[in-house]
Image (cartoon, rainbow over all chains, first blue to last red):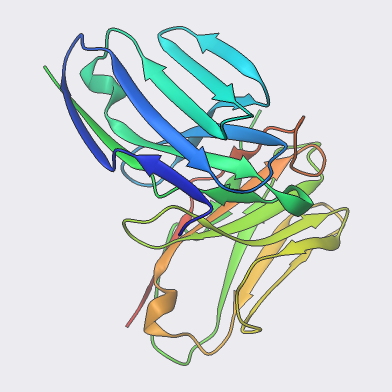
Length: 108
Length: 115
């Protein structure tokens, strides 16, 4: 069992839909990152959070430390949101442990 | 200001060869981390360097080594390449040790193909 698990693995949505990607972890963490990876490999950090909720534009990230669970929400999804979304937990030694990623496709 | 840069962008090697990948962090960043991402999977932590010292190592064989230079740039070396080493190698930099208060900034990666 991976220390960090994401669901779903693949997600297809229609433009405008509300999207939720989930991340569960089984180890102690000090923080959790949500990352976006576009075709070609470049990774962009979307959020880093250790408690509560953060919002940036149409993106919202939440974390529940007690339940060891985080969610990434995208409101009013758009085709340009199509990418792989990866959660990464900051575990011992300040290293990142990554989930497998969620491939999101938003159709026009 | 330039972001994290990596070179080369693509590389093809044959089994048994050696490869050196390079990373230049964002100016002022003192920490560099290396990750391996096999196709279809999430990245795996290889090394973290801070102030030229190794501060963390993932579950990779001794064929993998790295170092950080006085200007904080870094090299990842892989000896005796195997087919399974084919992957995207990502470098990320941060001001300090990557942790609660540190955002990591990723480079574009080096795509290595071992034939």
